[in-house]
Length: 368
View (spheres, rainbow, N blue to C red):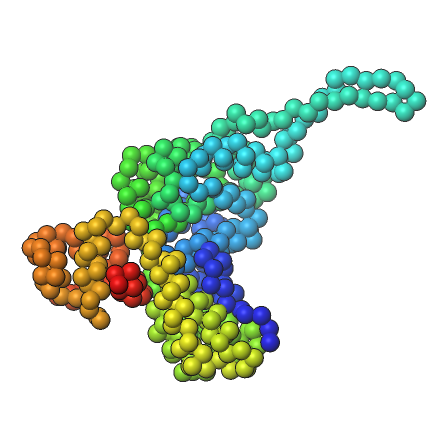
């Protein structure tokens, strides 16, 4: 049988991308519209597993297809320093004809002849971020293209670094350079970052919140992925896969991957094969999504989540307050903060529910 076509690794582009065609096409149009197009500055947010990095990869590919230079900015502390001292000098040394200039320093007359030269590097490490980006954009414009800056995990970048990037980017925009920016990150971290001074350019970017795929998109992606790899997935198996995936692109890949393995050498992936993925799905979500998502959650909010986890479905806010032994007013404050973190969501009058697939199972597991 052919190799497994599903790719359940964070940030790895799937063979069949589901539900994001509209965004990709809008960005493609923006690259052709010229400076001033609003979709040339985008900030993508969404919880872990929603496919932010995959979308970022696809947008980069769209830019490369048009011949644009793609500058993938380093994540975390030291972003600007690494970009100034390594990333941009290296890129400019490859693409700029004026990057090296040789000058004669001496010579000699021998049977063969000789000449001594030195190399003057046009881009020493002291060049500024703005100057190097401007030069790169100028070179790109000469070929009718531009420069795309991308930054994943925006929330992990220090405010001072964002401010320096903003200054450089805004200078290029004012000079009508062909430049674009796409950042991606977690909703809570981005919201916190945008409250800080020096992040104006991010506030002005188009804010795109990635939501779950709809059932038809999940089903279509699963069927096409399996079919392209030479197998068949039964209609019953597709319906169950859709229910287990909850619209999360990562879960679509994870369930598909393990269902493919469970089918062994069989040509058809069955409902039983998909059912056998539940345990690994809950475990992987627990370790790779829920544990990181809850790391910075204060104890009082964790207590609220554990009180909710006692219910098999939506929780009554009054009952949660009783379980915690606090006033409804105090419980409402905690509830509001958890909604802002996108860990829970309103589920009707006086009701809330967990917002992430299998978060309830994770809370029960760690609370045992």
